[in-house]
Amino acid sequence: MLILASGSSWKLDLLQRIGFEVIGVGHLADEDALVEADPKRSVRRIAEAKALSVEATAEAIVVGADQLLFHEGEVFGKAATAGEGGAKH
Image 1 (tube, one colour):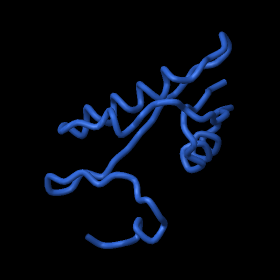
Image 2: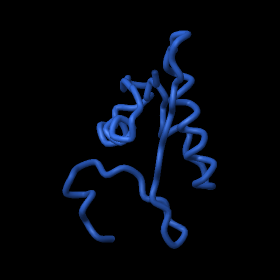
Image 3: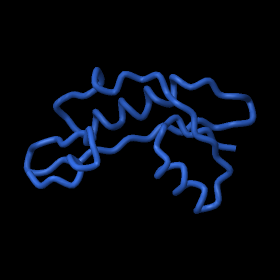
């Protein structure tokens, strides 16, 4: 059994489609406070903080995941709205 430390329905669905028994739970990590200049390090720190903020049972493995878009030296965070997500910069 996996516990996905995320509110992402996309990540939950992906793990289920490839055969994992998984439940998604909200995390307590402050993602904005963990962002730094190195995007790879930021994603690792956020994923780890998400996983560590969720209480696991002895029968489960907690998975934390995060992603960001890094293009031409600029980090693009989560879109606030669906319209913003489709906007071109």
